[in-house]
Length: 276
Image (cartoon, rainbow, N blue to C red):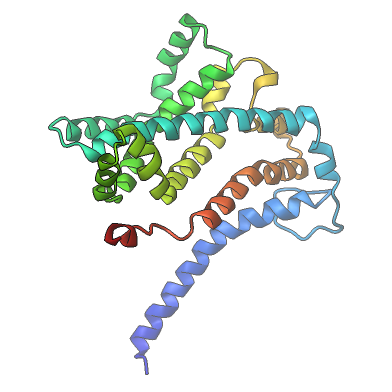
């Protein structure tokens, strides 16, 4: 039998968890219910009648399809560049000992602390000088550069978990360091690559400030910027269409997370490989 004090502590903990859960559930409930409500407002309420008119209104090339395609091009390309660069940078940091490793990692960690707004002015001036302003490739490069420091940290930590004995066996068979990285290390750290991929993609997908500053042509704007069009003048907002667009906008991130979680949910399985 639990003591009265233990019961009170457990009830207090449960109440705290319920409050935290409500803080997350209520905004999500508002988005779902408002997307199906023809007269949505800021209140969380059951619609008088379920309708899909809000989705019909936003499912157009100008409002949804073109911005989503731009977002996929920007975030997908920047994520691939980030993951590839992070793997190449993390490999020597993980496999070779040097007195410069710790200072380099400390510098990388410091770079993750820099606020993006503090460096946008010189970045904007630089992009104007090198003719990268208002270009998709320039925005992709900056996205990748901004996420690369933390991606290197994550990739190195996962790479440290891959036994070096497996690489030594590949070296004995005549493989180079690059070949052992591609054929041995990276296939065995699938969960780590998936974590870096999801983290980088999600951080870029929701970024408003960078594409808003570096892209000038409306046809190139991603969905994270075009969502601002739902906020009209004098505070007027079409809440139902905003909620419908938010659901559509969140779908790629949710699908990516589900696919990666199902594919790499088993974690590392290196023990048997080392013993064999």
